[in-house]
Length: 172
Image (cartoon, rainbow, N blue to C red; front, side, top):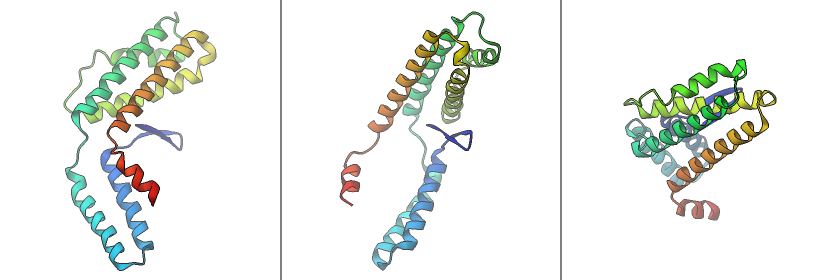
């Protein structure tokens, strides 16, 4: 999922996420005084460090996200097209969003998901910035589609999380 950081949109790669987990565990491990527990923390760091280059996102899940992003971007393009003429600052966005449907998905589905995620965030930002130049119904419809997409994506992400982990964390 894309996140905003210091005014820039960042799409976290799996490698970056694993790297941050390793750094966090290393910091936590430095604070552990029990030698056995500390060795266990560093063993997990070692496993993650050696496993990280071999781990990839599940292609089927990434493709579901791509399909959903393409669909919501198509709906945004249609809604913006209803506002004839599209405000000048949104013309480039309209063209980018319309082109999504014509560009085939290549072999690097993670890069495509990241590209579409950035475009989705850009669309939300630009529509918000120019909301006073668009009919209120169009803005509301776009926001509803964006909210629905984000809910579906959250549901997909939560479906991949193993529930017992939450129970163990709450007991810690």
